[in-house]
Amino acid sequence: MIDGKKVLFSGMQSTGSLTLGNYLGALKNWVTLSDEYECFYSVVDMHSITIRQEPSELRKRARNLLTLYIAAGLDPKKNCIYYQSHVSGHAELAWILNCFTYIGELNRMTQFKDKAAKHADNINAGLYTYPVLMAADILLYQADVVPVGKDQLQHLEITRDIAQRFNAIYGEVFTIPEPYMGKAGANIRSLQNPDKKMSKSDENANASIYLMDDPDTIIRKFKRAVTDSEASVRYREEQPGIKNLIEIYCACTGKTPEETEKEFDGRGYSEFKPAVGEAVVSVLKPVQDRFYELSKDKAYIDGIIKENAEKANYYATKTLRKVQKKIGFPERIR
Ligand code: TYM
Image (cartoon, rainbow, N blue to C red; front, top):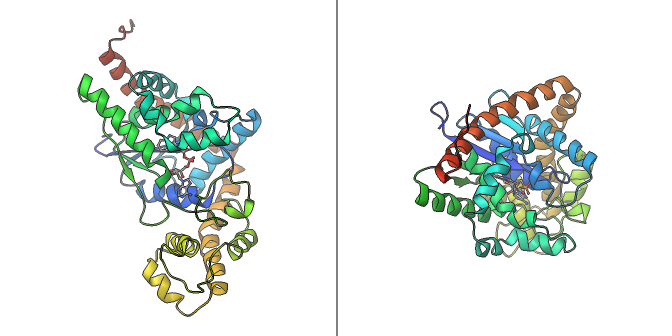
C-alpha cells in the first residue's frame, strides 16, 4: 500500500516496435487502472539486452516507449513512468532472488525455450534468468496487481512462487502479486497465422499491426488477414482467424463477441475485415498524434524521466533495505 492505495506494477520491453497486441493486451488496460492504484510503469530496458541491441537504437526506442506510455493516456504526475536501468535496485534484488530460484523452475519457462530457439547463437545467462529480473521488478514495489497479456502469466506464477518461498523463510517481506487481464485483448494472434501470438519479432510485417502504422497500412493489413472459407463472422475455436479479429474488434469498441456476431450477421468478410481496421485506427490514431506532439517537447519528457526515477528509487530502496536486512547483510554505517 502507498498512501492507502494498492500498488500496480507493469512493464514493457523497449525492443522492436510495439504491436497492437502490446497495446490491447497491456497498455490500454494500464490507462483504465491508473486511477484505482498507485502505479509503476517501467520501460524495462535491462530485459531488452538479453537479446543483442544496437546501443543508439536501444536508447531511441526506450525514449519512444516512455513517450508512448504518456501518449496512450498515462498521466506522468500520477503514474511513475521510468526506465528500469535508472533504478539499480532492480539488479540488486534480482541477484538476491536468483539465490531463491531453482534451475528446475527456470527450465520450465516456455518464453526461454522460444527465445533460445530463435537466438541459438546467443543463449546467455540473462535470457535464462530473465524471469527472476521480472520477479524483482514486481516485488521491489510490493505490487498487488500486475496487468499483463496471457503470454506473461507463467512469469507471474514464478514470481509468486519466489515471493512465497522467500516469505516462508523470512516472514512477510513481499506482497504476493495477482495478474490482471482485460476482458478482451489479452491474447492477440498473428494476422497471418492465428496459431502464433502477434509479436514484435515476426519476420512477416503483415502479421502484426504496429502501433505507429498509418491508417492505410492498418486497413490493408486487416484486409489481408488470414481467415477461412466459412464466410460467417462467428466467435468460435474452429475459426481462429475470425475469432482473433472479433477479439480485436471487441477490445477496440467495447462490444461483446455476441454483439459483434449480430452486427455482422449475413455480411461477408469483405465488410467485416475493414470494419476491424477502422476500429483499430480510431483507437490508435489519437495515440499516434499525441506521441508526435509529445516527442517535440524534450524538456517536458526529460523532467518526467528525472522526477519519476527519483520516486521509483525511493520505493525500490525501501524494499531493498528491508530484504538486505532480513537476509543478514551488514548494516550501513551513516
Ligand atoms: P513484452 O514487452 O513482450 O510485452 C508487453 C506486454 O504486452 C503483452 N503482449 C500481448 N498481449 C496480448 N496479445 C499479444 N499478442 C501480446 N504480446 C505482448 C505482454 O503480455 C505484456 O504484458 N517480460 C515482459 C516485460 C516485463 C514485465 C515486468 C511485465 C518485465 N518486467 C514486470 C510485467 C511485470 C515482456 O517481455 O513483455
